[in-house]
Length: 79
Image 1 (cartoon, one colour):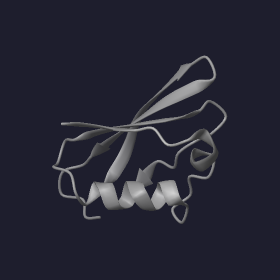
Image 2 (tube, one colour):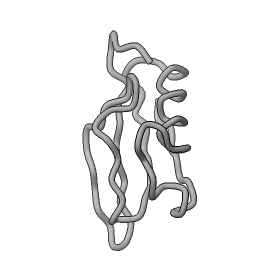
Image 3 (cartoon, one colour):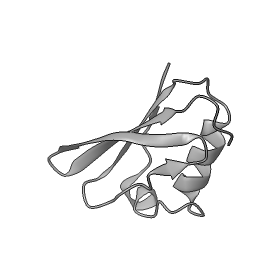
Image 4 (cartoon, one colour):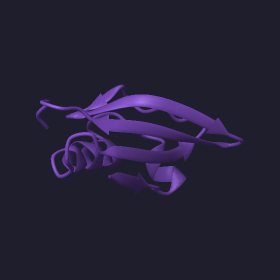
């Protein structure tokens, strides 16, 4: 499964665990199956943490002024 998360850039600038985006990713990790890929689009100058609950960042691709972050729901991790 793949889930795309494309928040407005203004909301994606803050991505710590207590931000709206961080809380969404933690919650989402508890709702998807193991192995699910979550793709988060942000401004290029923004950065995600390495983990949000059971979601772990596995890749980051830059395209012009935007970036796509790829997080995967890891087997056996709890949210």
